[in-house]
Length: 537
Ligand code: ADP
Image (cartoon, rainbow, N blue to C red; front, side, top):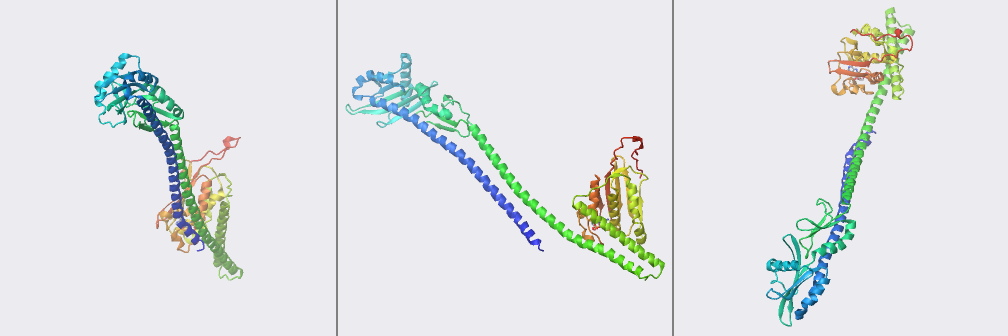
């Protein structure tokens, strides 16, 4: 009872430990996920901030350079426009051409100035402007001084136009100023200057509406930390695309981290659960063994006491001469011999058993004949069988191969199996059979009784130390529960195995299977070595 409480507490705490382990695993998993997520978020945020800033800088640059030019237009002196402007436009890198329109949307005299030397090209643009661009420019809806952009393309060529409505208060007239932004300058000079420093740290590019790269490296769309956004007000058909240079590495690292976190958490959980399970298993096994041990102690002391008191009692009777007939005297002496035999077998078992317990069961393997060992062991029972009127059917082959064995230990095996058959086998005959399997080179020794049998769920347990079946525990048949454990140990030490076939109420057959281990041949006189004999039987 003293043991019960801590064990019960332990059983109770097992689900608690499991629950705590699960909660801890869940918490660690979430923290790991959050950590990975926040580092990814911070990369993405940094990228987004940089991207937004870059887009604004492009817009600001274009808008500012437009405004500078717009402000230079002296509407009161348009006569001077062409002369002054051609100079300014020529000097302004970002502007390719400028057009001034009057309120009827006609190009004012000298109102078209351009940078390119190529006259034909300049004329072609003016034609394109008046024919196609002007009709779609929402000039009429423009509020004064509002600055707008048109980003468009004709025949595969992109155009960025900047336009504004201006009042000439002096003459009460309205003018429209349209600038053609020099996209070659933007892509060839401005963007490289602006984006180069970013490009050193990451991957950056500008793509047009068809997805062609206008500037920078092309970026795989699948990239995880991708920034992809159209320019806001000027080059709104173009997109700025960015990614950290080592995004693949970052991703791989994050993936690795996630994986190692998960493995660690899994391992931790596994170790906790396994550890607790082992602890429980160990404790419950120990508990069972200690319960069995105390039962063993009481059984053994009982088994020791009974034969001793019998020996003493009949010894005293003989000593005091209280024997009526010589037959009675022989009978008393027989009882004393039988009980002494039982006592010595029990002591043998206990001694051998404690040797096994300490792990020092050293067996003395010598070439031997199992049939002879069995025969000699059965001799021990002759008298007891006769007295109890039991029959023993022995079936031994005339010869079996010589094998390496410990005769004393195997005698103990036979004694235990036959003793059990006599104890638990009812009154029907007991069959002891030795058979040699030539093909598998194995010796099979079986002891069959027709007694109480063993329930299926106990057939493995009977080979455990101290185990006695439920049926036997309810009878007054004496036993210590170590005989079969010894049989198993000895058999396995000989490289063999022991098994039982049994059904409750129908008897049991215990079979010990031993491989034939040939003695190593002596160096000389190989002819003297007995070749293994084949058993018939
Ligand atoms: P014991 O000293 O109790 O006989 P053993 O180790 O020899 O110890 O056997 C363990 C238990 O196995 C026995 O207590 C008994 O319950 C069961 N057992 C062994 N042999 C037989 C048998 N031939 N028939 C039925 N039960 C058996």
